[in-house]
Length: 158
Image 1 (cartoon, rainbow, N blue to C red):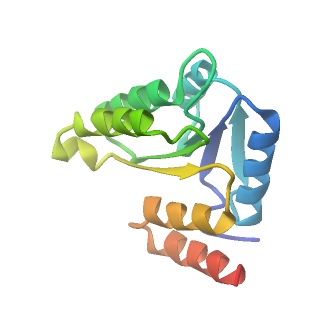
Image 2 (cartoon, one colour):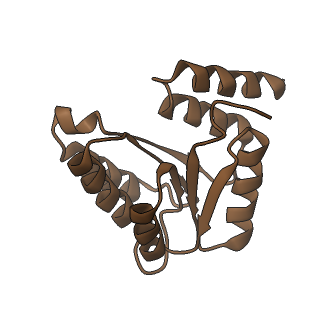
Image 3 (cartoon, rainbow, N blue to C red):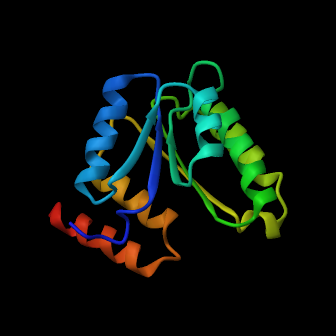
């Protein structure tokens, strides 16, 4: 299947193998063909620096380097490099108020000019494919071909 998202590399970060595999299967079914799955934040940070990652989907609670720490590191990296917008989706069962405040505090620490270099959102476990597609539409809202593709996938769910 030739889709506008087939060449986007997605990094899936979760300590649970079955969660990573499930997310990878869902993403492949909607057209993402390049997925990297990683089980901890430290390896994700290192992998980001050596790969052209278009989307990061990460659990908040991770060994070695939390998803929030990973988010902060990648935001600083992407706003310094300023060549490609970082898209980051928290995929978590830990969407408590404290975690959400931490995420917002990190994002609010950037200037309006820097904020154009990242987009982020949060989706709670258990995963619903329709909710994932809606979050991805938001993250890729500037790209009309991708947005249209995701909308078509969403309409298939009926």
